[in-house]
Length: 120
Length: 308
Image (tube, rainbow over all chains, first blue to last red; front, side, top):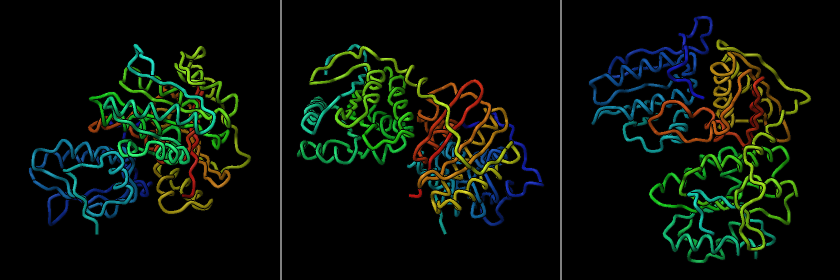
């Protein structure tokens, strides 16, 4: 079903802004802000962000997700797998994730100690 | 229960009336508790109630689930009810009573129900588990009772257990892999990879127009995203999405040119650290019913979503 590793996830084309994902480093804390959709089309960009996060030395990396409008189960899976692979003492702080992300995370990973959710 | 050489034991229990029901289930539960085996009971509400009363204090040691809720979509019973319980007690043998087919199941639900019963066998092959499946012989159709002989290697009737002479679960899966009749009218969209977000939005817009709201619209978005992504990755790169209303439910269907040749797809809980393998599982968790017809010529997956 899920295609991680085999999807030819191309960057979202500029003519399809509704399905695009934009990622920027946060200015005042370690981590990134992501906006748009995390779907099959944008999966590679999302996984690249998570890859950078995994390699970072920061104890807590923030993902500011208030402008994410959709996330599919593969996007949540990539996040959960990244969180499980973090070095001892590290964690991911999710800021204002969409309700769907929290639901799917809870459905498959009800206890992930390395993910902290900050709702507004 | 008769001693068996197979670790997995899967009898059908044919009962007539409460007395036979309790006679076939209460000793099964008590024997399990005495042997230190974890016991779960997932049956329709009225049968839950009589079992709890009959068990008295023993009921405190049994996990109870209302199958009409937990197993409303039969496609999620294996991962979410049966394996969820068995996998949380991997060190020991477990006993489960699972009653997925009751007299109120509709003819649209039934093919998915009987395929589920058949698929329990490969799903639990080699596992240290006993799953006892009660069948209400007073109220279920003859065909349902006959099918239970094909989906269960053991049958218990009139207090006697014996091997089923008709056990053939693969035949059941194939026989109920039936073409899905087309609705009289539906909203339709052809999609390919660049239109995946459009397809999702299309489904949500029409589902809202047909009466869904809130969390159920989120479910539609997740379901359609998984099914359409599947078509793009495994189903030939494109497909057809249809949305319509049926009774009080919204139906979303995705057709493509793929062939779903693994009948347990979407019914195996993946390892925690596995990236893939949750798409169809999520669809089964969220939908109230999933009907699938698959052949080398193509696959149709049809999801029914209730307003609540």
